[in-house]
Length: 153
Picture 1: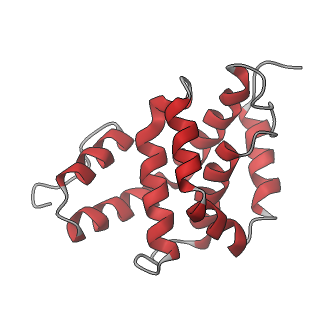
Picture 2: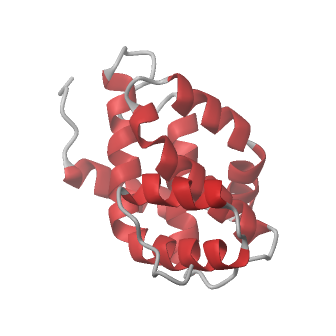
């Protein structure tokens, strides 16, 4: 087995999964958010990106609940793919393989993040403006690796 995952492999897997993602998958991502969070938190590989995962979980819950619907459906699908890919133990590299089994999860998360980061940024700015929660602003800054807020937020 090749120990490196290429961007082409991740892209092909993303495209394959995007053709099969449904409303049931959105619901599953929402309902399984605690399990996803636990898996990320316990992973030495994935925990470095826990801010991104938390923000994506908040985003998909807000979308599912109808609180934020300004997302292109392809972005919704991408978020669901990233979250459920983390949860799925059998993917490009099965999670049973130590360290390597989580590298493809990380690769999928980062591939999706790069693709949808502008939509996530728009959401994050909206969320911060509508929720005067300082811990949320810290989470958003952690997820993006920088302060994305204008002075007025």
